[in-house]
Length: 171
Image (cartoon, rainbow, N blue to C red; front, side, top):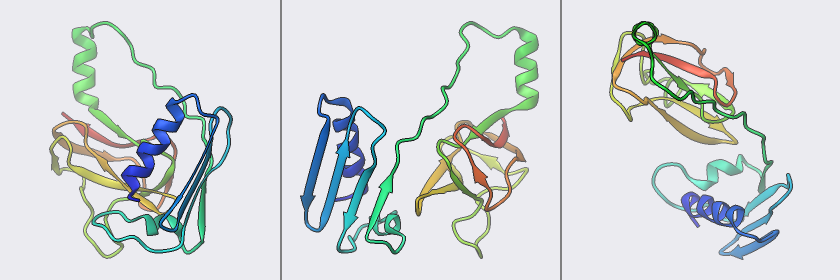
């Protein structure tokens, strides 16, 4: 079972009226409880093949991985239009690329590799600008806008929280 399939399964169970769910096939065991802060366990006996991120990375050498449900802060959005002064101020400050999860921030795909972006680099919407590692799973962080990297706000290898600004991009 691929990572995307597991994530879809978790979403389906979370959205359903089920309170508990167990699945076991091909050396993979998934047990979930819904409705309370219960652990979600994924156990694997073999290493699956596949391009990109592999489930084996989630194992981290152990025979199972436990994911605890975490409370995420709410994102607040303001309604209404910006005044001309606010638009000018926003253009000077730029747009912040924030972390979508808690984990370790990396500027490059490997220790000896060039960083994805540096201050002054031009980026396109959807371009990978960093990686945040969570539970041995590497999550690509993409720019949400076209622009120029104005500032890198986090050091390589630093822990980041959900919603923490990572980059400032001048649009």
